[in-house]
Amino acid sequence: MWHFPVAIPSSLGPWAVFLSVLVTQLGLPVPAAPMLILGGTMAAMGQASYASMFAAAIGATLLADSLWFSAGRLRGRRFLNGLVRYSLSLDTTLRIARKVFERYGAPILVIAKFLPGLGLMSAPLLGTTAIAVPVFLFWDLTGATLWATVWLLGGAALDHEIVRIVLWVRSSGGTIFDAFAAIFVTFLLYRWVRRLQFRRWLAKVRIEPAQLDAMMKSSDPPLIFDARPRAIRQKDAYRIAGAYPLDLDSSDQIDPALMTRPLVVYCVCPNEATAKKIIQQLQRKNIHHVRALKGGLDAWEKHGYPVEALPVDFDASRYTVKPELEMDGEYTVRARLSDT
Image (cartoon, rainbow, N blue to C red; front, side, top):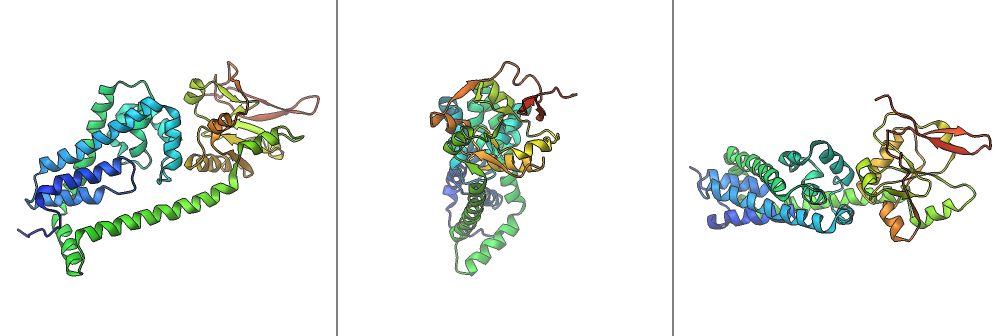
């Protein structure tokens, strides 16, 4: 059997796995997969036990997820908005996470760690719901076990290849820590470049609350659309004055006559990836001049601008936005029931 020349003492292997998984699950841009693969290889080479590696990975995951769950339960939706806003992961979108959990519920935790955007968001998102703590812990434990098993057994199955890589690193004058540092720097640099590109694009399509307020008071006020998920509108039953519901997932095209009006859309927190999703979906409806409200409805309220209660039938059906010209020549937006 080959000797596995790593700089991590065998007795500290489980602790290295625990620390790596913990910082990853707490949201730091440090991928845990390389350390889990290395842990699986160490176990396969007899330098650590499988049980200790599994316990370390699962324990760290449950600890981090429990902290996120508690934060979501104590701080609510505004905590989630801040998490999306400051996360380095541009793929993390609160809107997608909400829709997935609304459809599948807590069992989606079984595969959440494998899905971009859900690994970090799942625990705090469920913390804002009425799900019981034991139910959350059961599904989170199941998901953590599956996630750790895949990476640890993957490292065990590829033990000879991993050893060759480590030997090559050492023969080049490096250590396993150098390899991890290179992976971390590459990953961080990639995320930073993506974030920079995204922010440059976002600056072109966002509108400040003060700008929207000025537009609403002008002689050519914009048409404002509320693109929040239905569940959020039911919980927070108010809107920017005069806003109309918009089903972003509908394939219906908005009437071309509306294209002559300034268009503004808001969601819950479109400071980051949510704004991109909204704009892309509207572009598929041939709407290319829409602006997204920076900070969404939360920012509008924070700046002290008025909101109004939602009409009773606001979410009674799926809405298709179509204009009609009344006798006085002004636009009205009517809602019609879908056939489904």
